[in-house]
Amino acid sequence: MKAVRRLVGWTVSATLLLTVQPSNRLTAQMDTLRAVALRVAQTRPDSGRAIMRRLLASLSPQDSLYPGALFTAGMLAPDAGLIATNLQRVVVEYGRSVWADSALVALAKLYFAQGDLTATAQAAERLRRDYPDSPLRPRADFTGARAYFDMKDDANGCALIREALDGAGADVEFKNQVTFYAPRCAMVPAGPVAGTTPTPGDSQTKSAAPASTYAVQVLAVKSASQVDEMLTRLKVMGFDARVVRDTSGLFKVRVGRYATHDEAAQVLRRLKTRLGGQPFVVEEP
Image (cartoon, rainbow, N blue to C red; front, side):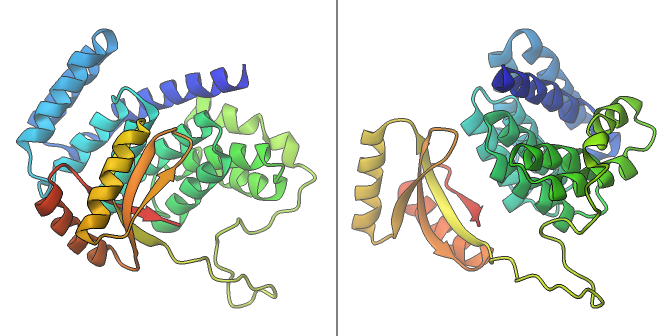
């Protein structure tokens, strides 16, 4: 039942994130196409996805409209693996777009629905760190807090609940959801949230968070035979290829571990020239 409630919550949250974007985020034409896709997808999901596929195909990845289309296509994707892949692309490849914070909130909710509590907390904390002024921060705080509570970490969970309450504003429904958890925190002392940087006056110091690395993902499938074939091709070409399997259940073939996004992007261009397809850069902890 718990898993069912989480998946229902993810569906509702996904719908909200798709429909409550500020009107200045897209041109009128893009907004109309997105609205049509959303409406059609309610009764004919395949047709809604087809609309977004055509829109993405008509746009250059360098177009300012591309991350918004990628976000919407991801949210309408038929399975969790494709949803996560598209949302991760928005965060990693279009981190400066107005859609990056929305993608992180959606990822946090998706991970929570899948029961991946660590990934949920990481997504929530990344939004707090990279987009501290985002109006979606209270939503990320709330989802992160629930993950911490399920991990029996009330200290960090309550710190996020307090932040979510402070940022709830006039949204009565959301405020009521957050307030439900407030009594749990009555006896938990206030303190900094994991991942925050102490001020110079703090007596305690935290070790620096491990630096992220970047890789190029070239394949995500359920078939082990396809994975073996791709690994062989990549190794023959001289690429350092490996397989990652996460909570989505997909086998993901990735190349390299690079210190910067630019290094990974250079490899991506080589891979695309030699293999074709749609490889993309991913960030790894």
